Length: 295
Image 1 (cartoon, rainbow, N blue to C red):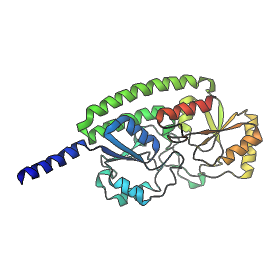
Image 2 (image 1 turned 180 degrees about the vertical axis):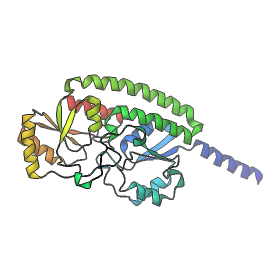
Image 3 (image 1 turned 135 degrees about the horizontal axis):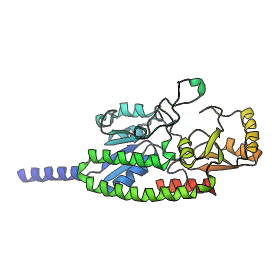
Image 4 (image 1 turned 135 degrees about the vertical axis):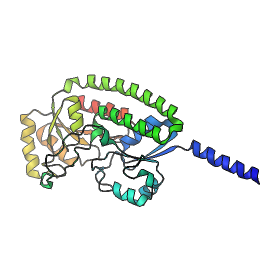
């Protein structure tokens, strides 16, 4: 009897030691990064796809079931998921992933936020108190988040630190080389003006020294009226703007209308991993983004 109990205990301990780190992410870019940094020692799940607006997600029972089993929650933060993440956390019954715990990780805590409002005024549209949350459009922000996320994964699963260390070093080397390549590719478009669908691209604009101040929205989160779009036709022509950028999850019709009336070209960008069928990881994301911007 003791032998059976000992064997049972051995199998329980062995299974626990070998169990993968369960990572619940809010957006695909963080699931992709977690997979890069954890390899076969993590199970990374994304609550959203590249064709969904992360501002507007329903806290479905299936997501509650997923987050209940998580060892680590990785989200953007800065109020991007304010409409649904708090509901998931409160209904999860999972103490280790609550704010202030090691299992709670917000990517925007580790980068310098841009576009912080001087004052909070809803008449200015859908603004975020902590700054613009769309940090994944710059690979330098990914670098900063990767460093912090690697450290957090080691903290939660020190048994597999050698695996995590090797994966992090490998990712960093490949990522730095890719950044150099992307910046060289972007030289022809430096300082060019683009129309954008929403102020989602501010970090991309800063990184590549692009002018993306003209938006299809009169104010953040406010759909354009016919009169506003009509006014943009003259802006596009006067400024010789060649491309109108919109995210894969966004309604393409305003961009397409403006392109038709102005002679500019409407260009869909993936925005995140899964934004199109060819963007399956973070490297693909920036490869396709640069190709679309420069081509």
